[in-house]
Amino acid sequence: MSEREREREDRPHVAVFRPDDERLATARSLLEELGADPVADPMLAVEPTGDRPVDADYVVFTSKTGAELVADDWEPGTATVVAIGPKTADALEAAGYAVDLVPEEFSSTGLVEALADRAAGATVEVARSDHGSPVLLDGLRDAGATVDETVLYRLVRPAGSGHSTEAAAAGDLDAACFTSSLTVEHFLEAAAKRGVRDAAVRGLNAAVVGVIGDPTRETAASHGIDVDVVATEATFETLARETVAALDADR
Image (cartoon, rainbow, N blue to C red; front, side):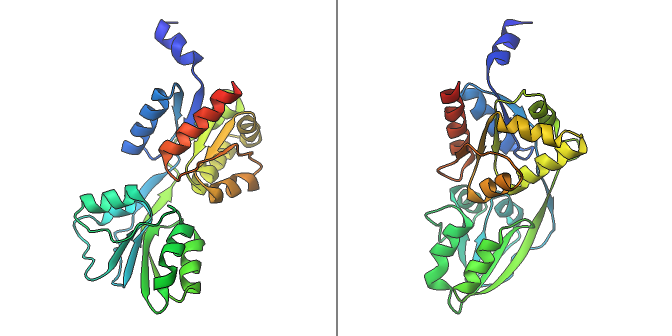
């Protein structure tokens, strides 16, 4: 074994499930910078629908992916453009759209709170994936808005994903960073397909599990996965840093 291989072997193995694009590359670089050996296992792939947001008083984007998909062929008209967080806002602005509102809390709950005083009698278009939380739609309707949802893309589990489940089952994962409820569900689906679901859950529970928010924590807990870290900010960078910090404290 080379010196470089020995060095990597000594580093904690941290699973990351980001889509296989610049997000995964950025995540790997960050984990390496934090002293971890990333176990990259994309659990999400994007299938665009080709649909676009309809006209409304407010148009809400809940992801960078959605913002990128509408670039160059969507006209906001007089709509107030709302982004769930700074990454989504940056993507919209890079495509030439003015962003009028970003909530203080980067979540569906934060969006509802930001729009609650404006929603009564307004039309709100929510442009997102097929796995969006009902919290946003229900909250806006409860606030008096007429809400429409356009699915810009579907999130599917990539073929061949799941090698991290075997690492977890073998006790070879030190930590895992889940960025959505769907990454948890796809991880478990991949583990079941390999016949290691129960062992993979035990492996996760012997490791440090970090999640990006309470909905993901609730999903993990519902499947018997113990969550050690809920990121204080809904970004991968915060999740990675706080997960590795918890892992370092345990070691």
